[in-house]
Image (cartoon, rainbow, N blue to C red; front, side, top):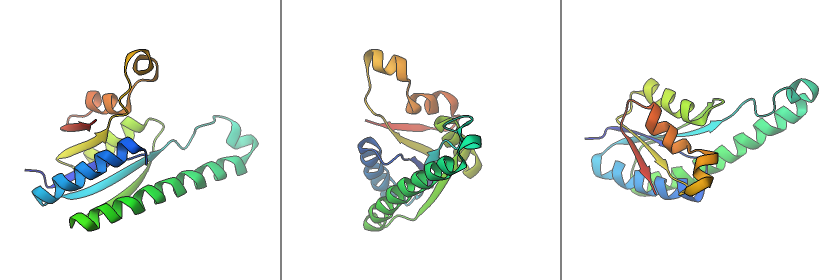
Length: 144
């Protein structure tokens, strides 16, 4: 049923849980997995102009975080016998970056972890997973 799965990751415990479930699902279906880590390239409007080294330090830290997450996912994929590709995506909105990559790759399924927020925290902070569900025309599996 699934041939290509997009796994959204941010290196969190929620993403880790979603990764384990994704690798299991991919193994069962013989699917390949593309893992996406989205970075906001403009987190501090105007600071890059005043302090270009601050921006470079931010991007280096983001790249290191994504490499750490991808390395761990590679271990999970190898253990499950799943083909894994990784993509570092630059987008101001994480959900938009995930949905656009899913469309570009024509994946069969997007898998994303839920941070399990509820009540006022969810209302105020919003949810990347919820935004992906709302914006995507492709099936989305939210792992809690």
